[in-house]
Image 1 (tube, each protein chain N blue to C red):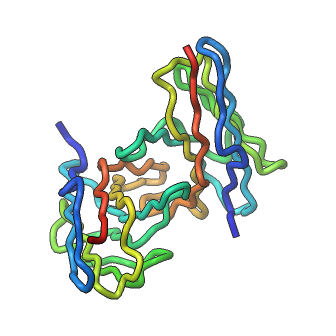
Image 2: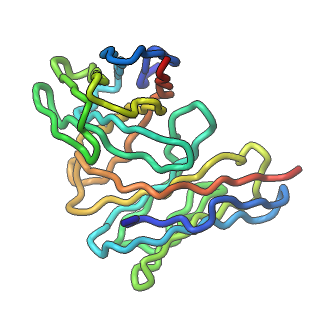
Length: 115
Length: 115
């Protein structure tokens, strides 16, 4: 059973517009959420995270929103650039804050930003 | 530069052969992880290690073995018992949390194929 769901396998947007990637989760014990970006044949690169005590975290062009009541988070990329074209993974972690956290991963959304 | 190095990038295995994938990090991270990614899938945890000389099974440990004799090294052996070893293998690490969430950082992966 998929505890972290990325229901859109792919997304296509025009350069300069907003990209919105969505992620839903089922486990209310999750308290730390991360977004990673992955190019083919490379490891995932950490983008941005959010703790369950917050509902928004921003880093440059990337903003993550968390709606705990809906068990939903989203990643906004504004403005989108062709170099943002990659697969984006949502991941979640349960339990106390700390070091050795098992991450539960979504299946990813492939973003294509068209020039 | 600090980082996680996985080698080799591509590896071929004959039926019935054990192979070992290397993962080295110079980030002074305590925790290290091994994941497997199959096409169109999210990452699945194979093994993880919180400290030297200690490791735990992840969700899909059958057919794999690990060791953690040194802080900077966490090799993964894919044994002949792993019936479907063809996949992309990713190694990750993260520092002590000290009460603060710390994202995992990844190497560039090893693609294992069966001859």
